[in-house]
Length: 300
Image 1 (cartoon, rainbow, N blue to C red):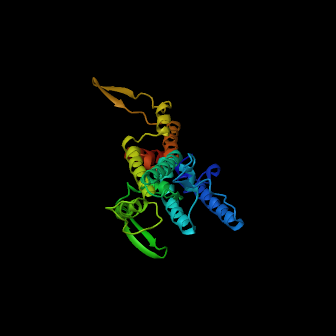
Image 2 (cartoon, rainbow, N blue to C red; image 1 turned 90 degrees about the vertical axis):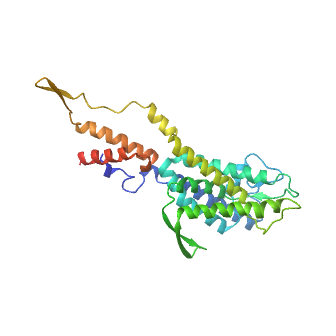
């Protein structure tokens, strides 16, 4: 099988893997939202168990709160960012990394939100929404694309083009300012520090997600090691070409390198293609990419 025959080089997923982890996540979020609508129509609280309670938190609520959203626009905003950046993380680093970043971002977002309210006068709030996990995925997906230009629909209808670096800086600034000047003083009765404005946005959870994304990106790109990498390192080495023949000319030895056979070239190409399938095209080094092109050309 040549490189052009591989499903991911044609832009399509294998038949047995049509739904990505990102699509599964979005499907679950939409299903839970519909379940909430059914509960409201029937006057039955179907999702109260999942919302993270500030006063009496349950262990599972530190993850389950991300399933519930406060309304359609809340779900739409998180869903659009998740669809855009989650797929990038999944294709670049693999499905397992996607789930880990999403889960840890959700957990840390909940923890930062809960601890931000410690000592407050009224601990009666609830936390819902997948924003923390989505923010974590967004940073992992975009921190290596800071110079890229993107076009966003501001308020879902006004196109605005800006660099990724500016988008992330604005997001971090809004999150930090909202936490310091709105959320923290609103949840506490401090005499020397009052809320400049009030809102129901959990900026602290967003901050936890951003921190998760930052550290996850640094870890993934510093070590370049994941479970899949470890499995590849433990795998047997690829087949090597036979030792080159040595030809003698007037007491000098010249190594004549034997060319790869078609079978050996195909085996080496398959190893590179399997690496792309497991962790995405971005995992290849420049040398790997050149070798991929050379081997593919030989087998045409």
